[in-house]
Every structure is written in C-alpha cells, then in structure tokens.
Image (cartoon, rainbow, N blue to C red):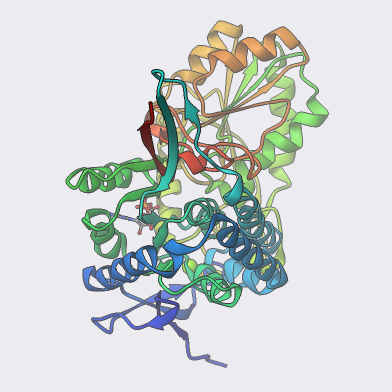
Length: 483
Ligand code: ADP
Ligand code: MG
C-alpha cells in the first residue's frame, strides 16, 4: 500500500510553521530508498522569523526565568523524551537507517543531556576576584543571547541534546538548523519541549538545505554564537560567514582517530571495542576509531582476529537491528566507495569484508564493513575521514613511531591507547594530540559528562560536560569601588 508522505513544518515560536516559499524536501528512508515524509525547505525568510522569535523570547519570558526554572524545564523535557523514547528511536531509525538499538541509545542520550544540563543550570556561577583595596570585583557568566546550532545527520538527537541543552541551561534562546537528511526526531522532541513548559521562541527549528537555511543562519547578524558540527569544508564556510558579524563559533569537524594497540594489551577486552568504534552508526561518526595502529610483534595475530570479526559483520535494515544499517544516502555510499576504489588502485590489501543480508532491500544504501591492512600512512584512507565502515590497520615499531603516526593527520579528535603498562599509558595520553584520550577503552565521543572537541582541523571549542557552559556564555566583570 502506498502511503502519503507525512508533511513536516518548521518549529517557530512553539508552533508548526510553513516555509514562506511553500516548498518541501523529500525525506528518504535509507533502509529501502523510499520517500516517507516531506520537510519544509527553509530560506533566509524563515531564518529571519526564527531569529526574531528567539530574540523576543530572550528579551522576554525566557530571559526572565531564573536558573532554577530553566533547569526544571529541561528536566521535565528530559522525562518526556525518556517516556517517548521508543517513538523517537523508531523515527530516528527510519530517518537515518541506524539500527534501532543504536537509535534507542541516542534517544536516551538526548534525555541524559537535558537531565545533566537541567541539573547544572543553577550550579554555574561567576567568581569574586582579588583587586585593589576598597574594591569588590565579581564576574557574571551571561548568555550570549540568540545562539545558532547547525546539526549534522549522523547523530541528530545526541548533537542537538548536547548543544541546545547547554545553551538553554544558561539562558540562551536557540535557532536550530538540522541536516536535510535527518531532522524528524528533533521536530518531535521540540513538541515535547512545549509540553515541558519551554516558553515560545526559546527553541526554534528551521529545516532545509545547508547552502540555503544553514548559510542564512550563519550569516544572520542577529545570531550571537554559532555551534557547528559537520565537515571541515562546511565548518570553514560557517566560520567565515559568522566572522563578518564578529560572531563566535564552536566547530566540531570530525577526525581520523587512532586506536593504538601495544603488544601487552588485553586483546579480549580490546577486540570488541576496536570493532565497535568503527562500525557504530556504520562508521558515520566524527569520533570513529578509523585507524588501528598495531605494535609490529602483535600485528599478524591481531589482524587475524580482527578479520574474523569483520567477516561476521552483517549490514541490514534499521529495524533488523544488525551490526550495521545502511549509510545515510546514496551520495554518502558513493563517497565511501570512491575511497575503497582508491585503496584498491593504491594496492592496499582488503583483509576481510562483512556481508549484506539477503533481506536488505536492493534500493537501500548498504555497504559491507571492510578491513584494510598495511595502509601507507600517507594514503588517503589513512589521512582523510571516510565516514563509512572502513578500518585502516597500520603497524608501528615503538612509542615514538606510534605517536608520529597517530599525530600525522590533519585531525585530532579522539585517540585510544591499549596497554597494561601504566607509565606508557600516561606518556602516550600526554603525547597524542586529541581532545579526548581513552586508555583501555574507547568511548566514541564518551559520556555526556566528558568535554569533547578537537585539536587542529577537528575544530575548536568544547561541547559536552560542564565545560560547554563556558562556551555558551560570555564573562562580564563588575568592579565596585566602595572605599
Ligand atoms: P554533509 O556534506 O555530510 O551533509 P555538512 O558538513 O555539509 O556535511 O553538513 C552539516 C550541516 O551543515 C548540515 O545541517 C548541513 O545542512 C549544513 N550545511 C551545509 N552547507 C552549509 C553552508 N554552506 N552553510 C551553513 N550550513 C551548511
Ligand atoms: Mg533521512
């Protein structure tokens, strides 16, 4: 039976709002290639309306709320998200193709971000500073005002939660531009925010294409801070547009994160983590552990065990809940295939490949997990973010070489270190250039409590954890001379 695709509108001033141009964008289910919904095609006009609504909220009802009240709204919202977890997860699985268990974890993470930042709202404060006699000096952490949030398609709920949760907790009003490929869960989450008591205009969502709605948001002079998660190239465009009106930005731009395995590592503990770090969300994870650097004496043996695991990995529809779902789009699959073709023409060895299950519809965007070995450190697949289920294995001889290879890409987001030697754990953790370092584990982004962000081309600024609250506020110093 053919179903009429559901039509979704922008969310502005707590109301579903049609695009000014009346246009829409089809929403594709990556598991079977069908169009099952339509979203509004946002333009500069819609962004203008959303920014106006946010400004009124900031100057009005939302701006007047106390930290305690803001925190309570976020915590009620968190409870509602948790109560609707299954609905949100199914929506996300359909929209992104990710296996339903992973989508459920994302919904739970969204609830957890709102709980964390709701709890933090009234525990974040300034200081008093020593100064000349006769003075009292204090600092206040003030919200920027209207914050823009440009969200990618890989983890809509998680990235929305960490960004909007922190921004709202400290009193900003938000305008969100989700990715055109995946925004349905966020539109639903926004409805729940109304139920939780969020005043109109504190949160607005404008859907649409990046170069249209996204570019209009980054260039809007009424935006006081932008947080962007996505590709390095788009991040550059957003930062350039924001610079014109001196708007601060936080950029999270992905990585080529290494997992470094020494010969003394606990392999039984490492193996499932090494695999999961690259296949989670079909490799479409900024913090994916996409390179495994292996001490040479262990290289052959570990490759063999990894190959066994990769051979058993299955890709299938989101609701079949296998190890891998499809990639987000045909465009993304073509991109990953191009990398694999370049690996092959470069003579790089494919050691193992997973499978696509028979029940996977042929119109879905599937690709089997692939393990590549002896990847030259200067090859594209050792340097660039593939954003697919492709793991590059590279041998090393000693700590110095491991550090050189680990740090030898343009990125620096996350690193994993596997060794039982305590001194080496700390030496390596200090020497790798990465925003998060995991020793004998790998969090692929870690918990909501852990600050996250990059060095080098992985971006700047930190989101997540308490640290994010500093980024979403500006410091004001007040010096009082009282004699
Ligand atoms: P991808 O190419 O995989 O979609 P992007 O980094 O381009 O990755 O997308 C991340 C987010 O940035 C999405 O919400 C997208 O719509 C948005 N975006 C894309 N191009 C621009 C742009 N020129 N200005 C602002 N946002 C953009
Ligand atoms: Mg989609």
